Each structure stands twice: as structure tokens, then as C-alpha cells.
Length: 408
Image 1 (tube, helix red, strand yellow):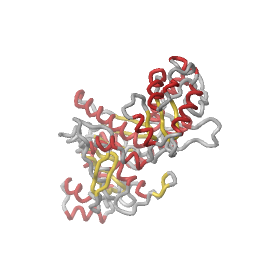
Image 2 (cartoon, rainbow, N blue to C red):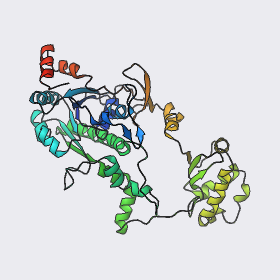
Image 3 (cartoon, rainbow, N blue to C red):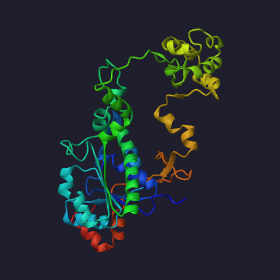
Image 4 (tube, rainbow, N blue to C red):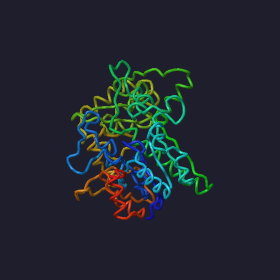
């Protein structure tokens, strides 16, 4: 299968996960992605030691927080503040289709990587900015992470925090909004490449974490705009909902949580009761037909009692082939081992720099029913010499550039 982005070259001047994750996606789709890292420090994310309270210091060459967003790239260490290094960037830009960055306006100005600077070198290049709060307005120069711009300011933290809580809920995973942002940027780049092919005009593509956060919570935001104020915190019953006993979280006898989302209780109640060995509940006046909608909380307590009396294995046996929608609440390892992910090729294998086979979550887009092929992320500045040779530099010129401090 020809991967759809084969033949596309992307130059990336970006750090952390938001924006770099787009390059990881596009590399899996076939693009050549050249990652420009600071000649001494590299991507700042390489220096992280903790994330959400967990140690992330690598004990091998395989560093998951770098592997995820940087899979399949080539890394070049260039000192953009050194004239000779900046000239090398121009050479790479000249042959590229796309330039991506998440540097703040001040840094872009200083390093001369704003739109006009890049377009002077390559007028046809697609220019991509990932920002915290957008490219315009008083917050355009303000830095942001997904924990601030996407999760907090974008509405997700409030949306998942119960009323009366003593603190807002935190993100469920490191780089949570960043990873979604990378996929969003990749889609924007694909659209811009298509537009350039059709019209001949290159685009400037902007994606912000705040905009992404608002998009993710758009139902609530749209509803709040409609009513003209904040939405109330709805206090649902402990089990089920006020109008549906088959919607909510329920715990099995062996302590596993199930999420039931059977949004048509009149349809699914009879099936549930039969499978749980409680057929009398089907004709119970409280729950027969539309009456179930009036006794959601009461029915939810009964459902909780039923589920609480059986193990997860027994639940799965009884619900095999059932029409009602439910899911097990899985931890991160269980997600990685999920049969549906593996059977569909969404867990991909890579060989790390030590020759050890590892696994990564693949991006969720497939073409022609074919799982993506992925490669490990580069070590810091791993491909500097190779890329310089591709630019036609001799061994003597490469040594001179290193002595000048222009490259790693």
C-alpha cells in the first residue's frame, strides 16, 4: 500500500508533544519529517523527569514520552542562533512542503522563523503554527500547556469535576490534549496540501489548544451560549440517572467498574432483566414500558444491587451477545492489551535504538484497511550528519559546522 503522505517533506521546529505529535502522525502516514532540535539541549521534553506525579526518566533508549510524538522522524541538532546554523535551516526549508512550529512569537521573531521569513526562502511552503491561545489577541504571546489551555481554560476540567469538590479533576493522562491536538494539526496539514494542489496557493494553518479544548466541550459550550450563562451542575443519583436505570457506573462483586450507556431504557430494560435472571422486573409496574423513565433512580439502585452480586466474568457471560451498550473501565495496561485494539492494528511494534522490540499506540487513522507501519523516535540529533550529507555537505564542511557550534 502506498501511504498517502509519501513524498511530503516536513520541517519541524517544535518541542514537547503538541505540534510534534502531528509529525508523528504524518510520519506514520508516510511523510518525511525532519525534527530540528537545539544543538545542545535538544527538545526540552527530553529533560522531563516527572509527569502527573509519575517518574518518566528513561532507563533504556526507549523513552515513551518522546517516542509517542516523534516516531518515525529524523533528528538534526542545529543552533538556529548561529548564522551558519540558521542558513542550514533555510536549505531544509527550501526543499520542504510544510514548516511547523510551536515557538512563541518572540522566539519566532528572534530566530527569524515567522511566516514571512520562511516564505522568503520558500514561497510555496505551508506554514503551521500551534499555539496555546491563538495567533491573535492579547494572549497570542502567552505560553500554554494542555493542562492550562486545553484542560482548564477549555472547559474539560470543570466538566468532569463534581459540584462541591475541593479541587478540579486533573487530566487522565500525560499529553492528553497535546496528543489530540497533534492529530488535529495533521488533518489541517493534509487539507492544506490538498488545497495547494488544487489552487496552487499555500496556506497558513493555525491550531490552538484553547480552540481544541472548546471543540472537545462544544456541546456544553453551545448549550451555555444558548441559555446565556453557566450550566448548572446536575446532581445525578448514585446509580443510574433520574430517567434511566441503565446509564451510569456500577461496580461488580470483584470490584470492577462498568459503564452502562443504554440510552433507550424502554428498549434495553427487558433484555437486561432477562439476562440477569430477574424477569419479574420486566412487568413490574414501576418499570414496564415508559414507566421506567419515571423511576430511573429506583431502578438504578436495583441494577447496582444485581451487578454488585456478580463478578465481572459472570457479567460478561450473561451479557454475551446483548444489544445494550456497556464497557469495562480499563486501566492503561488493559487498554494496551485490549483485543479490539490489537486485532485492528492500533498497537504497533517498533524496534528501539538498543534493538529491543517495543510497542506503541498507533494513530487511530488507517487507510485501505491496513495498519500503519511505524519506526522508533530518533535519539537526540541522531541524523545530523546524514541530513547534512543529503544537503550536499562534505565531511570537511560538516566538521567546520560543528567547530562553529552550528550543529551538534
